Image (cartoon, rainbow, N blue to C red; front, side):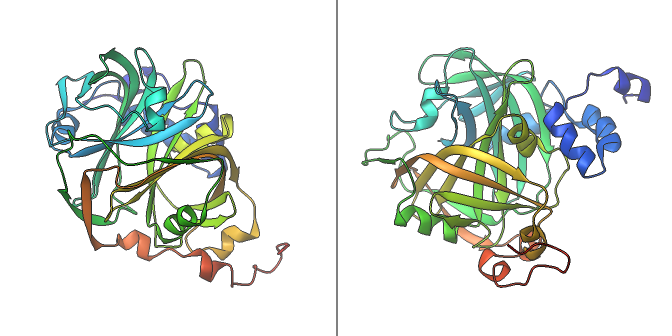
Length: 332
């Protein structure tokens, strides 16, 4: 069992963007100790076994233009494995038309999220690609940590085809969001976000966000997203403070459609809209600049089961936009 002395000897896992938001939330001192305990440079056996039972992973990477992308890697359970505690081996790569592919390759930083929707479990493994042959890759794990189950809607999965059969559809690339893309976002109860920071060595992260349908507002090419109470790590928003670029992923779970976008991001700590949206503690916005829609790209399909109790305790933009701003705030 680690002692207080050995924990304090461990370098802080937080960069300046994360600590800024932790201070703003009044939890910096507590998180300094907690981070040293829970963020490891290896995968515990529980995480190694967890990744091996998953049918998909969400990965985040950064392309040559500096744009982050989030995408799905899928395969029959066992396609991801951990041959030793510091390596995650993934026997899948993105399709040629997936913008995530441009960010992957030898020695490239990558963020990996393992999420099991039917149990609401999720764990992260971030690091660099140590081996790559165009069909599979190894991640040299630099950060491994778990996340709470809040805001994850439960869904059961099945494969509509073999995941070895590559996407054969016609991707649609845009400079902005068209009407079908806005409709998918408006009804979404889940999204994934890739972000990164160049605090020393570049580090990429990919995370999950969830709520009730309507928790993401889309105005033209601008998405506004509430940030609810969470683990106080501020990995995503901390990255956005230092480097205001985000890559979002939306999945049509019934059809296997994938919407990916990348653009400029901003974190909003003071706005009357925060109080108007039930459960929001802050907001963040993404101005979509590059968009890819790939209908039927995934072999996986999911059947909705239930909303997270945490999601049910939060709001939706259609209702929030009708609420009066709290007294003493500028409603403009």
